[in-house]
Structures are given as structure tokens and as C-alpha cells.
Length: 425
Image (cartoon, rainbow, N blue to C red; front, side, top):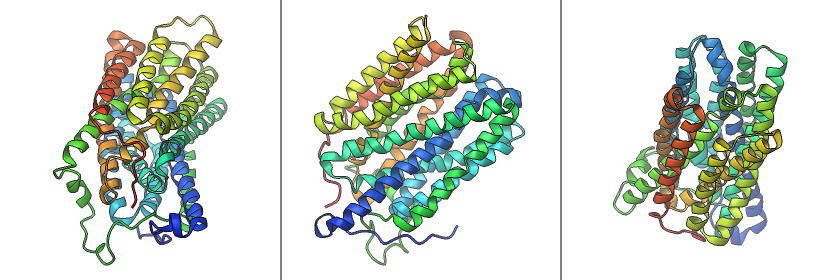
């Protein structure tokens, strides 16, 4: 794919010398990063929503569904590694275009799968581009955000995932209400091509905050050199701890998200309309959790806020799984709390991880820690899928989710507190 033309990077001095132009670039960076992540969420959450219909159509079981989810997430780890490194080499905005086109196209192609093997191929390719979006968007936006507001700005970007998820849930409800399940899931994946249209706006309007390589050096630079750099002395231990932190963080989130639609339909006996209502309430709770967490991060710091978030996430999962639901209202309240508490953990990730790495390798550091963590955590859904036969789906979600939340909290306190850190000199 030929490299599209991107507006030249804005020098770091824009923030003081050209405030009006800087504010315009900043707003565009917020829009590009948030919409990119939201559209990524729109495409990626289609799979768990349609999982029941996919398994029935292709003659597969729950364990197979968990395995496909795991393989896709492992692929996303590889994609994140490459995407972050390429963003350091070619620029944040340019690589953002590539990844949005990629995950849109391969989500749509998933609709053509005639068997499990074909579906795995498309999910792997979709996962490669899905994994690349987050580190690229976070690196772009974190370098624009003011230190005292970075927690709120990055949490706002993270909250866009809830909007994308809500859009895919509504699409799921509409399509599955009109069409038989064996056709509906294919139509749903075809809708995933829509985000590709967004790249036209990015191409014309979005630029990087700073160049990462001196003039004339880009042609000689190794595109993957940043991955080597994050393991040099001084960064190696931070990279490893940040990666383990993300194993726990992703694992806690995936334990709930990957199987919640299936749990609601199998163990709570909900049909499409009931599942949709529960998911929309969870998504609203998630949006509240994302946005509110940013204010707490800016006020109290990264480590105290994130510790409280993981504690509340564990408590909410225990309540949801172990509380007998005697009324619809009680069930909706509990699922709202799960969405709010689990998503509040994710709201701080952009600020925490972007502040761990220097500008020259920020994309590589974000891509490695976030996505290798995702790749390892991806085995969580597979473990849950196999555990479900003997322990029940709800109990399996609880054991895996809570254990990984503890891991994330321990690793969090091995990283430095970075509240208020300046990223661009």
C-alpha cells in the first residue's frame, strides 16, 4: 500500500508560539484518536455478539469459540508490536490510516467464512490491524495532551470504545431481529466495512505533534528498531513490568467481555432483545467508568486510582455472578456496576503506559506492553471456555477475571507514579 500524504508534523513549540493552530491540531488529534478507537470497538465487539449464531452455523462448540477469540487476540499482540514500531518510524497519523483500513476490510471478509478454519484466517488478519490501532492512537494523542489533563483526555479516548460497542450492539439487535441468525451474523460483519470511510478525513486533517527522526534519517532507519530500544538498560525492566501489568489488565476485561453475551443467553436465559438491553446498560456503565476515571487520575495519581478501580472491578464481578437475580431491575443495576467498574480500569491505561516511555520509542513501548500483554491475556477466554464445562461459565469468568485483576494491581505498584509528567519538551 503506498503511503498516503499526511500534513507535516507540528513542531513541539506550537503549544506556545501558535496557540490557535495548536488548538486546531489538538482537537483533530482528539477526534482522530477517539473515533479510531471507537470504530475499532465497533468492528471488534461484533464477534462476541454474534458468537452464538456463528457457533451454531459452523457446527462448533463454546471451547472452539473461546479458542478463536484467543487466536485473534494473540494476532492482535503481533499487530500491536508492528503498529507501534511503525508509528515511531513512519508517523502516528499515517499508520493510523493503514490500521483502520485493515481492521475494517478483514472484519467484513469474516462474513464469507464457510467453516471454522476460514473464520480463523479472517479473525487473525483482523486481529493484526485491531491490535495496532490502540498504541498508534494513544501515542498520537498523549503527545498533544497537557500533563495536568492527560488522564481526562486519554480516558475520553478510551470511552469511545463504549460508543463503538453500543453501535455494534444496536446493529446486532436490528439485524438479528430482521434476519435469521445464520444470515444475520454475516450481514453484521459486512457492516464492519463502514469505518474505512473515516480515513479520508484523517488523511486531510491530522498531523503528528513531533517528528521522531531527524531529517534524512528516515530512509536509513530500521522500522523495528524501537522494539530493540525498549529492551536496552534503563527501559528493559519497565517494559517487562508494563507488559505484565497489561496481562492482568486485559485478562480481567476479557474475562467479562468475551463471554458476557453468551452467559446472558445460556445461564440467564435471555433472548436477543433481553441480551441487547443488558449489554446496552453495561456499555452505558462502561462509558461512565471510562470518563470518570480520567478525572480521578488527574486528581489523585495513577497508582491510587488504578488500585481502587481494580478493587471495584473484582467486587462488581462477585456481585453480578453470585447474586441471585430476582428482578429485571436488579439485574440491570448489577450489569451497570460491572460495566462501570471494569471499564474504569481501562480508562487509565493510555495515561499510565504513555508516560512510561520516551518519545522516540513511545509507539514501540506502547505497542509491545499493551499488545504482548493482550496476547498472553488472550489465553484467558480459552481457559474460561474449557473450564465452563466443569465449573459453569459464570464461575469460570469469576475465577479468571479476579486472579488477573490481582496480577495487574501488583505490577502497577512496581511502576513509577507519573502524574503530571511532560512528554514533549
